[in-house]
Amino acid sequence: MFWLGGFLALEVTTSTPDALCPPLEEARAAIKARVGEVRGEYHVEFGLVRGNNGQPVLKLEVREGAQKVLERELQLDDAGCQNAAQTIALVLERYFDAVEKPTARAPDLEPLPGSAGAELSQKSPPPVTRELALDPPRAAARTAFRGSAGFTYDLELGLAPALGIGFFPGSFRISPRLQLGMALVVSPFLRPRTEQVRAEELRAFTLEAALMLPATLTVDRWSVSVGPWAQLRLQRADAPGLAHHRTAYRAVPGLGGFAQLGWSLRPAWTLGLGVAVGAQAARGTSQFALRRAESEPKLVLVPESAFGQGQLTLTLEL
Image (cartoon, rainbow, N blue to C red; front, top):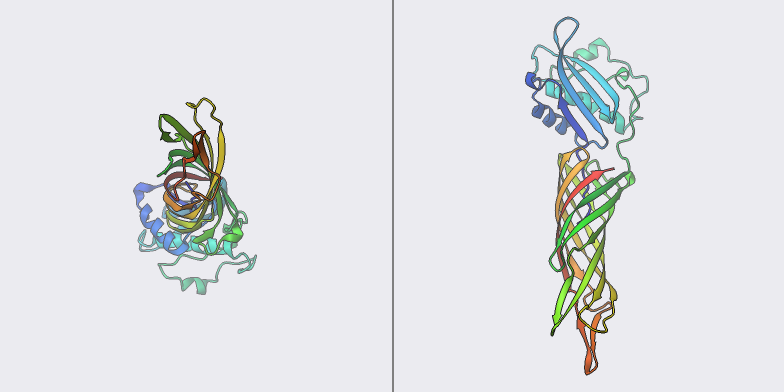
């Protein structure tokens, strides 16, 4: 198991789904095309309501966590709901541009004069003005901590539960869609590896710790993570059938790489499926040996020179 990055943080819903003004999927597609990826617990909701004059009005709200940061009532033009999705997307694009570039516009921005406003076509709504921002938002590139849980299946050792923690500094973000991070995952394998020598059974229990440096590319709800993988397997071996057996310990290091495909179930939850492969020190580390009085010690439970495992994970942004 390894770390999964990438979350769809901008959740879009509608309070009037039956009105189809605009259809929810059409609005999501328009917002994706204009806004792209947004980090943070943002929730966008729109709905069709009746204005004071009885005319239909599109109400738009944006919340960051539990706090409302944007509210807008958009008058529908002669085309009705035909351009509503693009209208919502343009308002959000300008708002999040202000979040990412707070110094790019003056603090006392005033509405455009009538002549400039008239130039906006039916496909473009009026610009966002300062009265709409209810609270100054935080910077989009923030440090994130993520916890993960799931299962690992190793070709040599079998099945293991896995728990992980990851750290994704805001300063490691290369672009809005590409981020670097680091993560640690611990996996205690459920069944020991065994070996039969004559009539005696030898067994070794394994605890694996893996460190990885994922580079995560996020596109809509999908994410792809790749990077280097370094693992250390701590093993305890015994032979309960021997009259004078002793418990022995060793550490087996390994190096390789991983790749993972993730899909965001909800803004903070991601389901991931991936693989990790590489080489490990089969004989360049401490060994388990079976000693007999009449012969030389015999190496037992020798680790494989290569490792391969698959992972299924569920990740939560903390």
